[in-house]
Image (cartoon, rainbow, N blue to C red; front, side):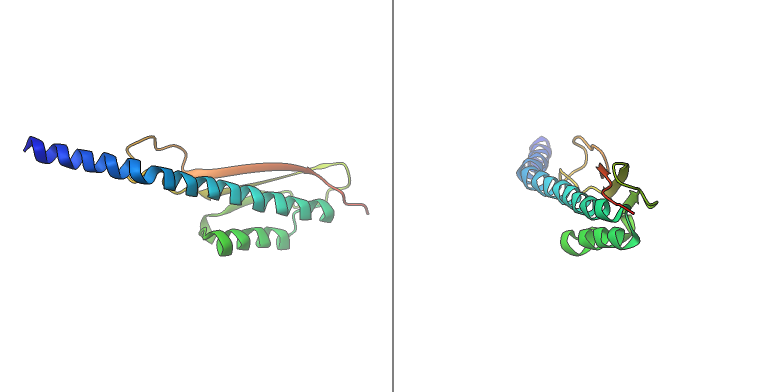
Length: 125
């Protein structure tokens, strides 16, 4: 009985350690994807003077179509009011985070990826 229990415990640990680097790499790619989408949306919004509905929709569709996030679970909060030049606009994206370990008994960590940005408006009336 002890030998069987030892083999199962060893198998669980080996599988966890075998897939942890791959899953951590995928998690880092998801973090980078959210960062890039937020940065690109902020560049467009700086010219427009606000995060328009089209910019927010394009950010959401980029995350859904290119990075396979669930559209219903993406939360985008951004400055929607018109902001003139040299005033700050804020935006944030929060998406669910995938697993880093096969079994969530090791360091569960945060459940979401949350990124913020602040950009100066370049809008001139």
